[in-house]
Image 1 (tube, rainbow, N blue to C red):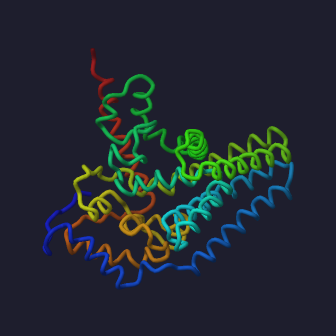
Image 2: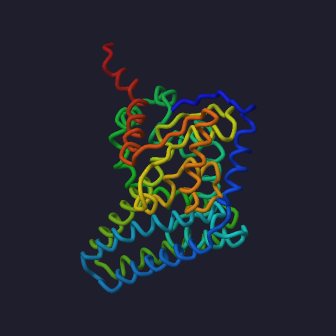
Length: 344
């Protein structure tokens, strides 16, 4: 996963310009309104159908099956919001923001403005220890230097973080809700009033539906199953993309900064659907506004070009991508585990 920096064509600064020319010549940055019209309708119908099933089934433990279904649908709505934020769906910023607010705040209870700003910082500096919020030093640690300074409970978690990774994903949905509320409370969001109202409507409607239709035990079980599986699915969608890949210094040119920190996941149509096209992470990071269905077409162009200029291009299977991420987490915690074996 290291780069070969030899450039047979000239300065590294010209590399992306040439790739961009080839992608534009292939017409791959043109919008796909038909694709997104179908996708938006299908996801909307699935969301409406899931809640309709919830009310039809009523006070029954069978609603837990609906919780599982809605967890998958919520993640698909989040993937739609992701594409909307990257201006893949609508041409104008205003239309994109409106759709994003509906999909994120109202439909799944996540602040669109907070997440879009956070995700933009990630795209600008993927895997950078200080600039990428997705590798911030919180519960999990992706940097050996940070791990070495931990003690107490934090050190215990870091020593065993590879084992905690999947269980912690069950809390991701709740974490997104909490971070959204915190951002709105602190005024860190552009359309604070609008977002607060929409997020409040979602939370109030969600909890009212659960506790008015179900018994308290059923409502609590639904809440746990739905939010836990939503977090796991969402985490499994984003985890293969960068975790375990190199961390840049910040001095790399745009093409290398995006390619060397990203990993593609091979697979067929099911993988494309399940991961929302994010399995073509390299192409997505190079061309964030490229419509999802065009990423697969761009992939052989980008891969061939990287081989041409001597830049490493990482692609692996889905299971192997998780294995690499977990291996990296385990290696980061190794010094803390070894220090416990040293006798005083």
